[in-house]
Image: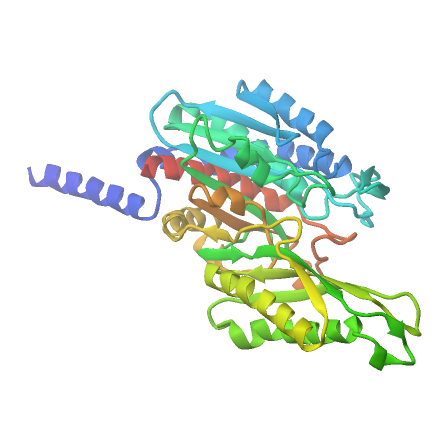
Length: 438
């Protein structure tokens, strides 16, 4: 009797331990590492194809056809044409459980590739009326390939799942062309998180400055909200030799630029989270000896918490109005200008629940708590509706130093194929573990 009780206690302890580190009995029985190794050659092949044939935002037609063809071959229920070129597939386990969404973005950038690769891009596309070179200069080619790999594994182990998986291939993450809408915001409006209703969503981004094999995460605000703005300052034109006859919009603009920087430096509690107000464009005048009638400023606001965002929305109009009035000028502020992304906010409870999954998948020593970044991601539109987790996966070769690794959105951008295996495993294990926990 004592021996039987001891065995029962030991088994119970093992189950409690496995659950505590995020490994259920069902999930632990799936050898995800081997499955990811088996699919890795296909993942690399898919990535090379996408990289060689990139397409711009809202123009991912051939990309969508390629993805649709593969997902259909897996026997999944596939929908196309969502938010113009988006592809969504549903895997139904036939058993009750949550609906887990996994997302990858599809679009390339108007960048001329300068890498000497056998699968380098030579593609051209049209961007705002101009013919431009096209490149996957941010890693979206790897994101699609990794999600296709996870779809293959999850389909193969369908019997181990509880609930449904929704695979979301999203167009136009980099922003729709002028005069168009697109991306995650449009997918949400068109019901991508409905029918069946999504309970949770996971996404990841390859990173050229993080070592292959590492994953970085941040609870709460992990990427910034983005709010572009435009200020048009109306003055009074005059000869440059007689400035006292003018209401000078150039000088007004200069004072305005200097003043709005103090919103961040003097009004935002930066020990909590970073914030940015940047003017990126100034237009006004056409001759050295004419003070113009009008000057236009265009800029961006980046914030990592709701309070800072709300404060800047109040402070910017206050500064613009006050400075314009003090100079005898008039100013028109448009905020936001043409688009606006919310904060990419990782649900803290979900992040904590998935931390053991990340540690088990990548190794505790390779699971890194990260600082937030002031770049933006429209994955945030999904997270406004359902709890979400967005993480960074390393793509930098180990023999390349961080300072020598090309930045995202540059002609030299490069990430190593070997980084994708971890992404495939993470997407798979997030799904398995969340289903077991719920």
